[in-house]
Length: 410
Image 1 (cartoon, one colour):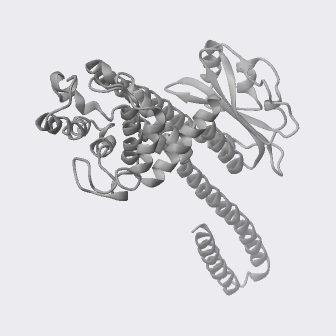
Image 2 (image 1 turned 30 degrees about the vertical axis):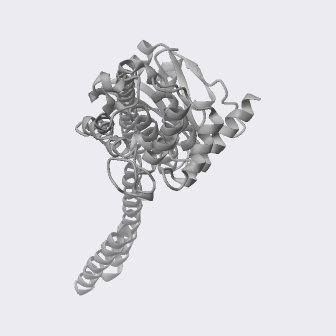
Image 3 (image 1 turned 45 degrees about the horizontal axis):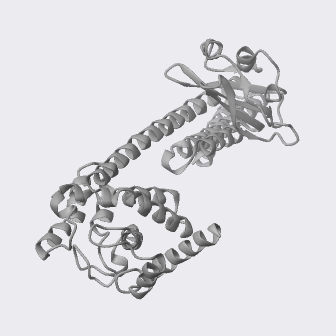
């Protein structure tokens, strides 16, 4: 787009210049004035090229800002810091840079990303500093040249503020949370004031992303706390299944790792496994704790717990994605089981994983009406029902996990 604008401006400039030249010739002042105008046109063309280059730079900057508009769930803090630093170095035409974040617990600036410092020892580059001094230095300006900011903050020279250098604070609501530095302008002596403004804008964008990541992590902790509380509520109601949800969760996590599921899928699998039996809260204790075998009516009541559990989490926005996984965790691969008749891969993958882990743990655990089965007997039952009750691929994975676990213990 910028090249089209540039060419258009050049054409207009040439037309205007041609008209002026023609007009000058018509007035019989051709020689001197034509030379002067041609000289002015040459200067104008140079300026237009500079404007075009600036426009290209702005378009690149806008693209970079778009790249920073990432979802915190997909990246960890170190990855975000490295991406932000790489963008800053690229946009500003620098050779290297570093990004530090302040740790309130240690009162240190922790080095979170460093690029281009080949041959420089950056180990242990966590710099002691008080938050008070850090905030005071940050309040002196949004950006400072020649290493002023880092010198004010640290009171010392480091490998990160040598050569041509600019540094800006990362701030959230006027609180300084870190520093981003870029070093050594490529092909030029010093960074320009425009470079400082660009780096300050990038720092603001980076700080927002980091704050969003922090908020997301806090939300995750609340989320996991709610899930664990719900799981404990089920275990507290039925002491015979105490620890059952935790064991099923451990099996499911091992399966997810063996299958190399992506991190988000692992988290979903873990959460669903933890509360897969949450619907049992709605079952009467005389049925849940009955020492003998259940009647048909009582078993019908038990079979409602996947639906009850699904209905419980569905209205809760951050748990609603677990609803179908809870709903189908007693669905058989061949369409048997409950609550529906869907088969094979129409059953959600995580639900199929929970089915295998849940059934195995139920078989080897003691119940009021029977002793738990020996491990080998339970594994044979999984094999026997592979392809009917259980997804055969998942049975194979589960058997490998148990074998590997036994091998480590011997």
